[in-house]
Amino acid sequence: MPPLFPKLAARLSRRMPERVNATSSAAKRNRVNEDITSDNLRLIDAEGNQVGIQTLEQALSAAEESGLDLVEIGPAEKPPVCRLMDYGKYLFHKNRKRQSARRKVKQIQVKELKFRPGTGDNDYDIKMRNMKRFLKQGNKVKVTLRFRGREMMHQNLGTAMLSRIRTDLGDSIQIEQMPRLEGRLMIMILAPAR
Image (cartoon, rainbow, N blue to C red; front, side, top):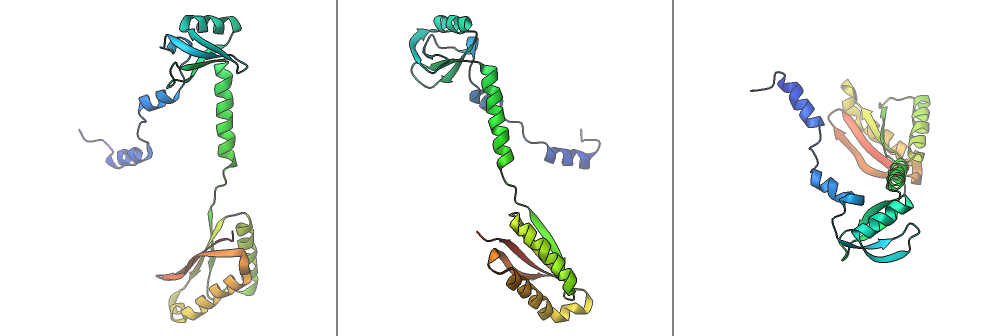
């Protein structure tokens, strides 16, 4: 039976990511306490000292005595390596590290500034000041020069304005896309110099 609202169903299906295979996410998680299947294992205590090879029952009783969890950290080893630790605290610190790493990533944005062939000097100065600020923040700048009506016959004025922008910015920029005419727009993309 087709969906009642086909356009909405198509839009929602594009937004929703495919379901990740449950086995792949389960394989990334460590086995804890009773989930460990191996009979013998190499045990490491809470301070990081090697205790030696022990049976699962001995390791579980040691974990219970110390009030910690038995976590399998090396499942591929022979015998598997397990450690005594507070698993909840471990997961908390792991998530915190991941979040702080995500916060530190710099997102580069593309800022757009629009000009016309007849843009006055005062407007030009304000737009140049904004452009320098965007480039200093590490963002890219898309300079769009729009031609209207008969201005299309005077594309040399637009080319002159874009070359003026390049010379005013000097060596502080790197041109990612040279000025190119697309319909009635002349577009140039700038990035901060590295």
